[in-house]
Length: 436
Image (cartoon, rainbow, N blue to C red; front, side, top):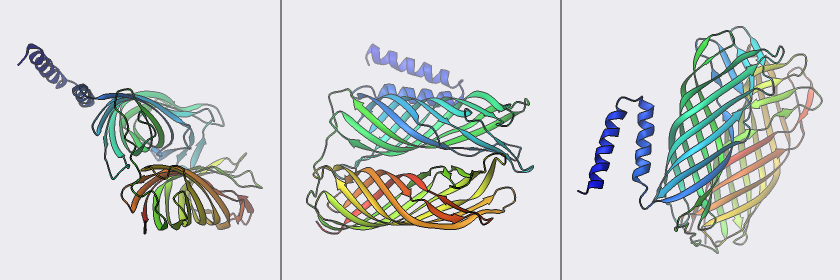
């Protein structure tokens, strides 16, 4: 054994003995750091930048009946520097997420406090992440990831009527993160990725304006677009498509998550505010007219829980239960830009009919606020990527914008209103072609 190797072993032993006295989460972070260091040899350095859209889970305040609901998140951002070796990636990531609180609701006393527009929940994190990439077929590169590290959580919520703060505090905590996504090679150095992340702070304490201290936990769901650049000599192998001239019938099933946009009830001061993230699923059958052009008939459902209804001044906001379900039947036209590659960008448009059902109740007493159905036309467009697995199977991932027309329905008091239901969706799918 050389002197250098012996010295490293002694240093490693000394560090491991020291870590036994450290807090558990610092031990875990240090362990990941040691793993990063051990992977330096024969690894390539990369940098990445990401933009995302987030949605926090409802914050339940322990030992009270208070719940804090959030609106759809402002764009999140992150930068990372890492090492890649074979199918593993290890990185350090700095991320920032910001969301607007909507309403603080005390179920027991039926009190509700509206927030001011400048109020916010922010989470600034330094995370050590590990990713495992899976090679499926010629060009499909899904990955799973996990990370942890310190995070600074800051929450400001003020009563909109008085301007007085109800919660204005911040704390350091341990944050955990899980992710799943797909990476898309564009050049031998540059790859694009789309992924879902779940950020979770299991234990932190905040003090309200009255001096009461609460032990809290907070989860945030988010969807991200990532650009990753390799600095080394290696690169992305861009495989040829295994069946470049495939035509004929195909069947596609997709699933994903959707963010419904706040909805103005035209003709009133009322707004459906703060939808939660909800599921989306679709099934389509189509025909490949030629390698680049595909025509398909799609049946889809989008569903989102309705959290808040805002009646405007002087009534204000109320917390709600219930959901909005949008069923649609559309004829879609899809164009594939690079049909002879295993990773194929595509774009498309579709139009058809929708049936949107509103089932919204007052969270305090269960009274029905909206219980009606709207029908009309719908238009959608999307951008995405297809990944060839073999001659018949391929996987897809895309971003979709689904836009309903101004459709009419009634409130529970008989008032007629018009509204436009709009949902942004990130989907993953599987496609089977019956013939080559």
